[in-house]
Amino acid sequence: MSFVPALHAEWIKIRTLRPLLGALAAVLVATAAFSALAAADTGDADPLFSVFFGVNFGQIAAIAFGTTAVASEFRGGALRLTLSAVPDRGRWFAAKTTAIALPALAVGLLTGFVTLLVGRAVLGASAPGWAEGVRGAVGCGLHLTLMTLFAAGLAAVLRSAVATLSVLIPFLLIVSFVVGDLSGGAADFLPDRAGQVALHSTWDGTLGPWSGLAVTALWTASALVAGGWSVRRRDA
Amino acid sequence: MTSIDVRDLTKDHGGRRAVDHLTFRVRPGRVTGFLGPNGAGKSTTLRLVLGLDRPTAGTATIGGHPYPRLGEPLRRVGALLDAGAAHGSRTARDHLLALAASNRIPARRVDTVLEETGLAPVARRRVRTYSLGMRQRLGIAAALLGDPEVVLLDEPANGLDPEGIVWIRTLLRRLAAEGRTVLVSSHLMGETAAFADHLLILGRGRLLADTPVREFIHARVRPHVRVRTTDPAALADLLARHGHDASRDEDGTWTVRHARVDDLGRLMSEAGVPVLELSAHEATLEEAYLDLTAAEAEFTAQPQGA
Image (tube, rainbow over all chains, first blue to last red; front, side, top):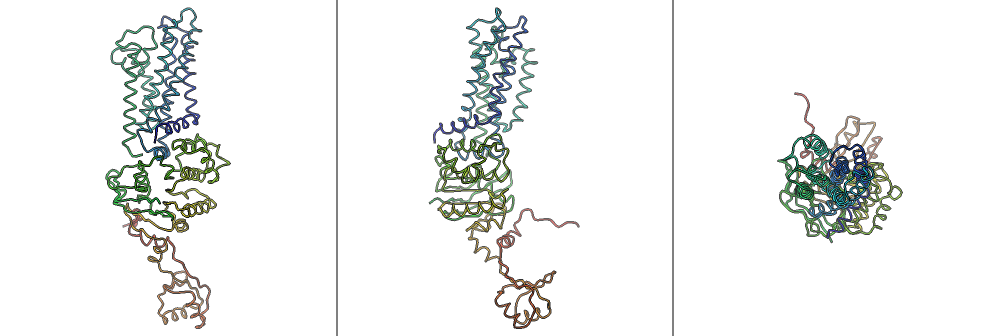
């Protein structure tokens, strides 16, 4: 049995669940809207990050998407039906992850470029340049995709949307707004802080835009490996 | 043809033995009823057969292969395990389309099974709006999706209305007549007796019986005759003279064991004993089952008080 039919099935499941489509739309709307609000009220903040500030809100919608897409399998015996159709659990989890990653990346990149255009319109003369802006837009797309998959992996370990979101949302809010602003060093290596370096014009930590995204990618890979391991090992 | 073969299958759930050295074969062309009280291990056995749970020991194969080895398994085996498996926010049709895509089953099969299970008119409604009976029908539609030669249904009659129960009975009979292997778990005796040819009975994870339904009933429960009369003394005397094993219930009805209505009717007529009621009592699966499981039931009521 090949990978493509399993991927096709998982894609149908995502496209036919309205809450998931809503979460994807919210990624775009929340990022662009909160960025525009922040940009309108900017002082001497980092020019690029005043364009992409809304990612802090958009990534909450992104983790809601990743969490819900996986956690919907862990209710009412849905996973048993799914695995009776695709008994190779590794293949199934790879298909599920791909079906989450592709729309997340598409929406993430779209969000990045829409946010960039909106931000430049709001900021006018003080807007960041195009080269820096495009780096930010691509970084925004990658960061949102990685956060989505981080949540998806965690949801496969915890097997519950409520459990996953009650770990991730306080984590993002507290780390982003409290711990993240206070300390450099270790906090820079947390998944959402590391990825967001790509959304800044300047950075003073050890991580640059791409190395920051690589660190977030490591977090995401670990969550997915743990999720895949849990799916393979446990009784459905 | 495709049989289900279970050999020495054992499953422990955290120190508790859910399935205990089960060995049986489910053959094609007949409906096999899978009976047992709650917690006897029926659902666990079905999950083990489908490769969803890992056995502690033993094997389960379908047509000689472990389930996970079947390529595109929905085309070989259809199963209903949980009526709640379909997501409430999805339509029945989308639910089945995703399932069909995973095994490259053509989309027209989706419409066929929706038609077959009577869900076609509501196929584009969200599953959240369905009654339990409709969800059950959707689960059965999913099981039939790949036109499988083996069908496993866990408590399919749950939540069905009387019309639905007649429908599932007819469906099961037809699937068996088409030569498919049909295994249906249930705790409803009357229902199981109505559709099953063969029985597997579980108690506390162990196999208590593997036998044709008729033989099982006849071996366990003797038929008897119910008699009511206005002259109990004359009846008692008559039965005693002819050596019948009889007893009188509290409501005045007599139960005569190992007797036939034809014989008793003639005797009472000749002796002039008035008859208010004379009826043959057919042994039921329920009686046979209770006889078997009386000692085995896991949740036998404990006597109250000191």
